[in-house]
Image 1: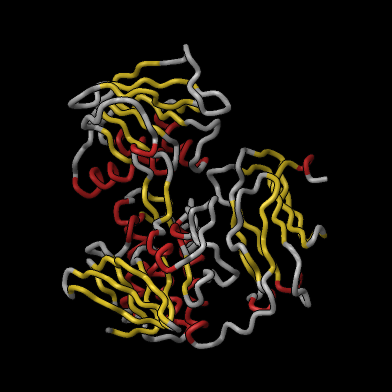
Image 2: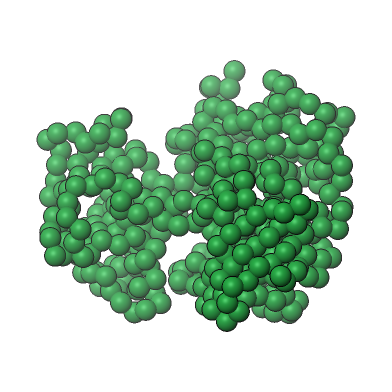
Length: 426
């Protein structure tokens, strides 16, 4: 059995940033395990620009952004193992045991003092939608289509309908158009888009691609190959409204219907998951309920900007190193964080004032579009913070910074993060 101080599972943007932060914090023995044949994760197929505006103060493509972290990891001489799929994660006594299958090393068992979960997320498949129809060729997830077009030079089709308005779906609407395909429309079952506002403008509006909100695909036509789809308007209960059906000819259907954090390994070791995010419940250090197991990036909750992934992963890697070095400090009691109003969840889920750094960033999403909004933080009903937000949307992550001084001497109580319209606050 091999031994390391810290094992980082995943070599994408989260895993790279976490490993770099752990090494810079003082733990030299850090190993990255990555199942793909190269580092960089999903960024390798995201050839559009728009990355790095927060982190590097310049606009980069996905591969360029990943390369910055790969170069830094190489400069620090952080070891990594590619083509290594982790198949089991367990805690034995004070150690974390990672079992992996490697193309070069074969069967591996690695014993670590701590681990960082950075496995990313996966796309929700067609099978989760229960859409009637045969199983013809021409149905792809948006991420698969992105990989085919950007990395393998293969066009999935020429006449396209996209179901779901997540950021990948919006970006692929533009990408397919630029490659010569006709994107008939983007249908979204919710009354709002799940993507960033800038992507709606730059990927749909700029190319005259219609976005049909409160619509979904109710039938897929074609037996050997997709020949068309039927879309229909839905009511407030997401049920198709009879008489609103519209037939659209197409040879390709791209699905951008949500991302799911990859938490099978998390479940195996006993990590508690948040039912809203499907990611681990973590404390202010991004540590799960399993001591020594930390989580960050899209495995924790699905992000809209990779810059926030890197920022979060830096925190997880730093705190994981502090755990190994015995520098996290003694707990004085955890305060639960609760979302309220339009806020759907919070990351982290608990806060220990004694182990806080100077500032703790709490990230959340709202469940509806809000104009003239407000974000509040309360401790046992007493307001600690209030900030106006002109616009909040489900597709864009919100955050609030909690200051250590607010919780001086506090050992119990409940923290509430509230978001909503200004008129709802009182």
